[in-house]
Length: 115
Length: 115
Image 1 (cartoon, chains in turn cyan, brown):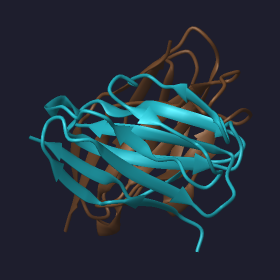
Image 2: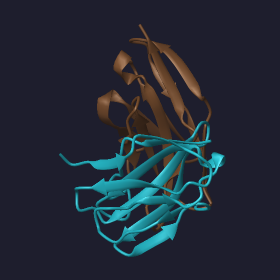
Image 3: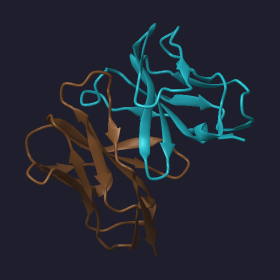
């Protein structure tokens, strides 16, 4: 089944403890992206990657890191999480770089709480 | 830069009644427009998109949207809703010449369909 898989679904952690949220897609998509969803703000892009070893900042990159060593994986790293990073995170991918050609496929989300 | 405003954060509606979700956008360049739906505990799915041509766009599950360039709006409608339409709906835009699938989302409208 074609899908974007995020893990974990739920994560509770403490301030400053490094964590990684994994994202994997099995559709051979070129483009991958991370979003955070906050009430009333919709989804805001954190980072995106147009291909292997190519990543770039989105609208809210502060406090996050990503890597794209393989085409299928795009982990999100929080080196020193803070409470303002408590949010619902989504990984998404698309076959091509532009959504008008190919829609974004989203994972089911990771709900992160930082205390 | 682009911005998207969804005027209603919540819309309660009775089953089999019509529903309209309002979306207005602001952009200094031409954009493509999208509606995504998020069912409970799931990621977003593409409902429909406007790229060019007829301003009335039909999507999945009986939804349609009308693009109005003069009013910079892209309202979503369904003539008769079902319980299964309970979800959050997001309007989004992307500049026609953007790189990186850089969608800008509205804040979302939560639709609650009551029996």
